[in-house]
Amino acid sequence: MFHSTLRRWALTGTLVAGVPTLLAAQSSSDNTGYGTTSAEFLLLGASARGAALGSGFTAIANDVSALYYNPAGISLLKTNQAQISTYDYVAETRYSWGGIAFPFGGGSKAFGVQLGTFGFDKQPVYTVDQPDGTGAFYSVNQTFAGVTYAQNFSDRFSAGLTGKFVFDQLGNVNGSAFAIDFGTNFHSQLGGKPIQFAFTLANLGTNISYSGKAINVNVPRDNPDSVPTLPQPGQLRTKAFPLPTTFRVGLAYDVISAASTRVTVLGEFNQATSNKAGFGFGTELALNRLGGSGFGAAVRASYSYAPANNITVPTTLTQLSSKENWQGSALGGGLNYQSGKFSIGLDYAYRYMGILGNTNFFTFSLGF
Image (cartoon, helix red, strand yellow):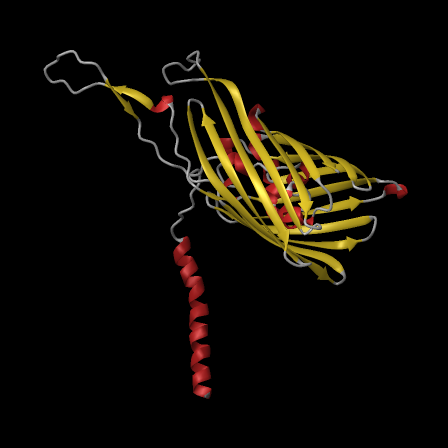
């Protein structure tokens, strides 16, 4: 029996020792799909609170914006909630999001819908032959619409599922796809204080194939006898692009948990199909019932690391300064008022996008 046990331990040790070798072999060839996904607007977020807390927000997404961040979170709602957000994004573009959720079944279940849209119009078309513009213009309009169902399966565990349609119009071509989001939330106590663990899988769906008049062409016929012939209609061959599927694992803990004050620290690991593994961490200070009133306030900060946004290049080529190292940082806060089932709130987030500049996120919330 001793020799049998020894052999099992030896085999286990050999397998464990071989893991670094396998990982090293895998890392020798980089197969990361940078720039291979479409509909990247699906990653822009949903609320100023989520934007200020970065990628770590998954674990504590317990308001209506959970429709986007973690479907399981809407099952924690106590009242009906609605949100409208607008994101002043880079290059004078704008992203907007709206959602509404309704708890039912005694508060153990919830249903919600969401809509997100991103785009711009009247952008001039430039070519190599006409660098000052052709006189033509193009527009981009990207939209997704989703329906979510979530349920508490116990006093500590909830799960949610979202089905959504994605519509992508790029100039004179367009495409569509269907995707699902799945999320879970485990909530318990550690040292008498709330702790939450969550994982989500977002944008798992079909590829987007594009069609439209922009890929329709007239092809000259092969005519060796130089006899005039009409060109034949044809269509350029296109490739289908996958959605930016993302897996996240988040953990949050309330280091201070009192009736009027809460301080939460949170962190997250994430992996997208179009990027290497990233991470994020942040904190939220929430003050409730200020001066015994129904008013409250919150302050938030976070940092998110995305490998594709932190590629080292010679500074002589990009003119980057030391402040570019702060790319991925975010700050924000909000004010709210609650009386019974009625609540109203306004939140703001500032996100630094490195060489792309600063962005601003605003959210208006209503509970009823």
